[in-house]
Each structure stands twice: as structure tokens, then as C-alpha cells.
Amino acid sequence: MNASLKIAKRRLGYLGGVALAALLFAAPLAPAQAADAEAAQPKIADIVRAPTDLPPPLTRRAPAHVTVNLDTVEVTGQLADGTTYNYWTFNGKVPGPFVRVRVGDTVTVKLHNEESSGMVHNVDFHAVTGPGGGAAATETDPGGDSSFTFKALNPGLYVYHCAVMPAAMHIASGMYGMILVEPEGGLPKVDHEFYVMQGEIYTEQPLGTPGEADASPEKLLNERPEYFVFNGAVGALTDQKPLQAKVGETVRIYFGVGGPNFTSSFHVIGEIFDHAYPFGTLTSAPSKDVQTITVPPGGATVVDFKLQVPGRYVLVDHALSRVQRGLVGFLNVTGPADKSIFDDGKAPAAKSSEAAPMPAHDKSNPLHLASMH
Image (cartoon, rainbow, N blue to C red; front, side, top):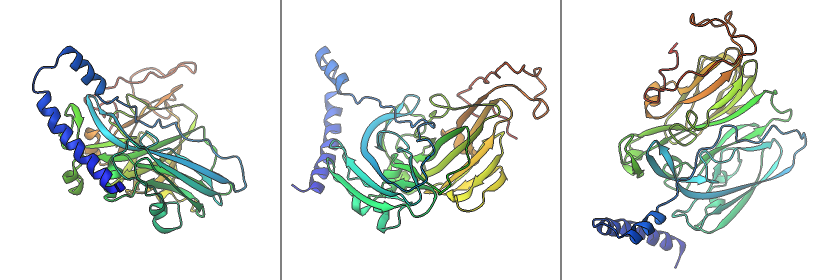
């Protein structure tokens, strides 16, 4: 039996299983049956990629041969409070692993598609000079392995994603990440680097519906997402894994848009980007003193800024209606206040040994805690 037929049978088997389950669960279950049913429920995986989960800057200044291992895994994860979703992932997280190489490196990408996958998967690296970015070379059936090798010719920050048709479905399910190709001299040093990606999720059920959400091909084709997310889920960078830093430190955010459809107007409320690298280019001079930067789907940017005032800074796409669909993150900054820079007129200046408390998080209104300019 060929691989395509196996996958088709797997899909039909799943649909048949759903219909059978509807009949079986119409009647009460015996205790032993209930225990078996509970055990059969999919485990809820932590699919959120921490913004600190990225390799440190490279210290070598000579090209090397680098191997990148990608494992395509389909897992059930928490999409929102009370809502789960069947994610398709690289290495079990959204976004996929942050790949860091140097210009001139030779890179071998090895892709394994888990046997439990219901789909063929592959990977297209935007940093590749070659047909499909490696997509055709890595088109892999469940249980299979593939690989290809490329030379990193152009410095920059680039997106990678699954490109099996319909590619938008694979991307919307979580199959995207970024690769940084450092220039020969590296990047200016900062105190903290963070990895953040924006995506959309299209579900049959309306926003906030509890239970397991099903993917909606119709909403995907019509570009009507129910959720907008940073790092895979609602609350990923607020309740779960917010960014953390201190007054006086410098931060760099590697920001990309997996998409698959919507452009982001990336903005950090209460901060100005000291340096911004539009479209992920690292060979052009950065823009300075930038408030908001445009990032298209399949695109990226790098922004740097110094923290001078403590408090909670809110990461948004300045298409602000998307906040209500889950697109918000926090950068929590502790340290001494400086009322010569910012005076809220409320409390006296904190002593140098005190840390500024974080404002309470009102989950019903993520922007309640942020000054809207």
C-alpha cells in the first residue's frame, strides 16, 4: 500500500471513529469503560515556545558545518483557557526551534516525520538559495526521514515553514519558525534576546468556545481567523511565559510572522525601538527611533531598545482588535523608577534598592493595564 493511500485511510478511520464515538457515548459508561475512555484522551502538551528559548550569539568567526534536526510532531495543546487544539509542530513547540548560523556556514537539515503523524510534512527555509527552499527535498511521509544541505549565503533573519499543500493549513496549525544568519562580525551585544512569532488559528468553533477546537478549512480560505497568537497560544507571553528584564538593560526581540495571511504592525506599548531592522535585513543600516514596524506574513524584523522605566510593557500588533482575539504579550521590567523620565503622578519615586511591582493582570481586558498612548 503506498504512503498516500495509508494517509487517506488514516483520515477516513479518524472520521469513522468520531461517528462511532458519538454512538457509544450516547449511553452512560460503566466505571471500567469510563476509566479506559479517560486514559484514551489525548494528553495536553505544552506547545508554547518560551521567548528565551534560543541559542546564544555565536562566538566563532569562521564558517562551520551545522546540522539542524527537525522532528514534525502533531500534538494536542492548550490554545486558550479551556480550549485545546491539534497542533502540527516542529519539535513539539510553536514556533519551531530558533536556528542560529553564521554567513558562510554549510547547513544540513535533517527532518523526521513522526509515525503518529496524519500528514506528509516538509520544511521550506527562506534563508536557502535553491528550489523550494528545501521543501521538495524534505517532503516526508509519516515515519520517514529526509535531508538536504545548503550554504548560508545571505545574512538576515528568515522564516521557515512547512510547505506541503495546502501550505496555509500546515502553517496555521503551527508549523513555522525562524533562522538567524549572523553577519561576519555578529550583532551588537545586548543583555537579553527574545524569540517571538505571530500566527493565526482558524477554528470551526467561535472564539472562546471550551473543549477541543477543530480546524476550519473554510475560515482559512476566507482569511477569517478566530484567534491571533504570539508563540502559539492565547496567554503564551502573558500568563505562561512573559518576557522579563531589568531597568538599565538592553533587549533584542527577534520577531517574525508565521501567518499565514495577516501582516503585523509590531509595537511595544510604552517603548520606542532604538534600532529596527526592517524585513529582517542585517546588512543595511538599521532605522532609529521607531514606534511601530510592519512585518508581512513570512517576514521578520529585529528590534533593540534600552529599558529606562520599570513596569509592564505590552507587546501588540497595532491592529488592536486582534488583542481581543489573543494577540498580546508582556515584557515585565523591574528596577528603580526615574521620575525625570516618567512620572505617573501616583506614588513617590522608588528607592534604588526597590523593584517596581507589576500591575495586576485583568484577563478580561488585556490592555486595561496599559496606557493607550
